[in-house]
Length: 368
Image 1 (cartoon, rainbow, N blue to C red):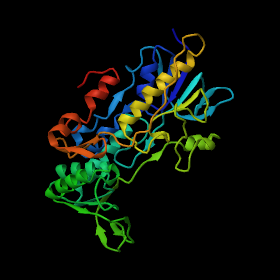
Image 2 (image 1 turned 120 degrees about the vertical axis):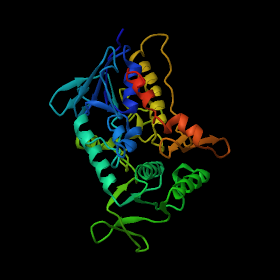
Image 3 (image 1 turned 120 degrees about the horizontal axis):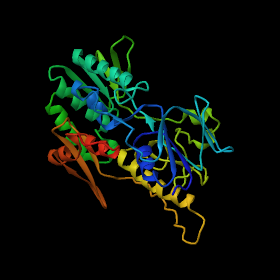
Image 4 (image 1 turned 30 degrees about the horizontal axis):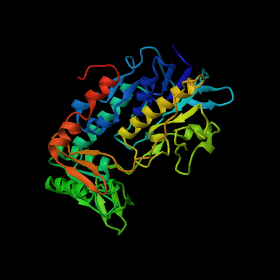
């Protein structure tokens, strides 16, 4: 039995999870500009190591048994006609629409183009540049910057690698000083030049970078792991700028609805439900939104279920790999600093496979 049309805009972690949860319950249409799912968790290693080049790409063709996946670009949500308008002019009617367009990430954790061939060429270009670089600068000492620095160091043990971070400690956004110290100790033990309190900007000459004190760093290759940008410009251009906060995230209520509308939801990195933008929280939001959408579609009747409220998460388990054989895991402890676990736990949970078998199973494929 299908209770209505649900259009999910965005096929990232949250969009895939939600579409799969509603498949068979509603007539689900998943729209994404990419022709395949992009397993972003594996992208930093794929940008460094050729043998990982195709790992992040998983086809959508086995995701839905009853619904459909469209490769296309949504340009507008017509709330009057209750239709999603695509760049081709096609209109998709909806009873519920879900915005799950995620965020744009810096290189190399970005899907360039719309096809696997285009994205694969971008990964190959990063690999070639890293292989030929004498000095690589990574700017940003959060989880992505630490992970990328470790991957580059292991792939290029003879090259100079510098990690510059504007904060006074690595991984300071996680709230775990112990994890930051462990990350710094690992990097420095592997000859990565870690520079703290070093806000970087491009220098006057090509290939030079300057910190806030005026000190110069010369590097022939740089990566900026300094944050993400929500993919919401299309909403602003489509007349829904009032749905966005100052940072560009979609404003949602505690049921993950947009503007209090019962038929418009936003999940994952694209919304303002929590400051932590990590995959487990995107998946948790998708599960809660799926419940609330089912509740909305089945609202008539004596036995309707009550919607659930999302509780923003400020501390959550987090794993930062140092390549495939080491890493640091942070486990929140009530009333105190997170417990910090070492390599064995990190390797088993994430570092070795980067959760690729799990995501392949989510999309209907075997683990390998």
